[in-house]
Length: 442
Image (cartoon, rainbow, N blue to C red; front, side, top):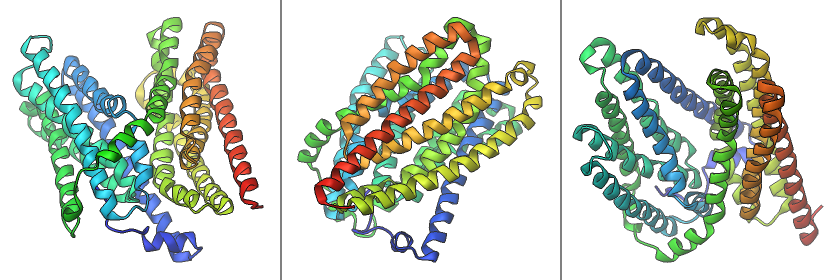
């Protein structure tokens, strides 16, 4: 929910000014965010292994669909409003921010009211074939997860990256070890409903933390509804909504093309290597780059292109250093872990992993430059490049996969990543040059 101050944290300000203590604080903050993100990833991996071993594949399938819905519903039915709102909230006085936050939640509640009505109607008609208890758990999770995703974006906009990632840990990383331990001790607890109840408990804990933070310290008196903001946000969110659709297509289209031409086993190899490399992307983008976006937005608002360039360079430099460190760690770990999986086909295609890892680094650069465009208010450019990326990916994969097989898919992923990052880099440079010329800055 809304932050409790009009200015960024004092330690962040001293870090920006070059104070050594502030820099140490920022580094420790980055390490904390990475640790929270890594804990989430490990918890999800452990839960996947546990469910495959101890629950039926049907239950695993339902859980997988629910995880997908938890990601897709806020993205598709959020209409890009979260991205637009998060930028608007940067360093906004609390009295103005609080009504926007409450109104944003109100939009999602209204959307969920329609979605839940449709869902329960389909359940009553027998279209959704789930026991009543399971259906109730699913409905509650979809509702609270949607609102929690909204809150995560709003916390980032209010420069509360640590709290945003703590709430993410509560709903994604804390509960799986409890469910796993319970199931290992008590075989009767090895059910889908117990897993879903654990997830729901994590969401309830998340919302208790959000409520305590949002309704104390004098914040409650600023709550209200801002319909003018809502109209503006729905209009302004369209480019981000299109970008989200394009981003999803770019990420997952290649595996469907690989599956169509090379079969499911080869797709499994590609997806396995992609998933490992994607850990580097998730930690770098969500743990390092995204929390720094409010600083970029604030630098852009200052109207000083020199200050913005300095902030951009610092953010991109830190992202590059952390991405290199994380890539090295994953690159060292995977060859060591491969024998444990007992899949000779993975070891035979290890070269594919190195290409995918390089492509992932290019993708990190592409997304980092997307955040720079976001700070520069180049929303339509973000949408255009994201949608163009889908077409470029399709052309590259449809050309390379039938001809070169799995190496072609990896090579196309690398080529597309490097090309799109280069395009965004040129666009960013041109925009900054234009602003420098307009202000007379050197």
